[in-house]
Length: 152
Image (tube, rainbow, N blue to C red; front, side, top):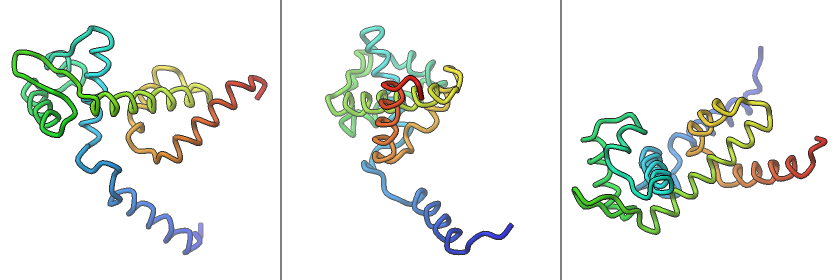
């Protein structure tokens, strides 16, 4: 199968750009966002989050959680005092809520196209960090249209 060379070059450039392009916030990684999301969800459900809870939900060791929580504290996303607890800052809450909204939107879209709810949530978790804001906006518009027009 012959591939148009211009299309091939554009595809290569988009792959390169996806891997070398700068994130909106370079000091925040996907893993950091996962931590903030889990902490936010735990606080919403239980009223607090412990390093043990985070360790269980992210399937990582307690020392790894402590290291990341300290890093999130240093970058201003949460306040952490050893043996006292974890408290998200407004900046941390904003990031966590944004991730939560992205996840919900992606899961909803996947369910609309017929993906099982469990799989939709797993897939949404895998891609929620990687979509451009413009893509998310268009997905949101699409989901609203489909939900408002059940006959589609």
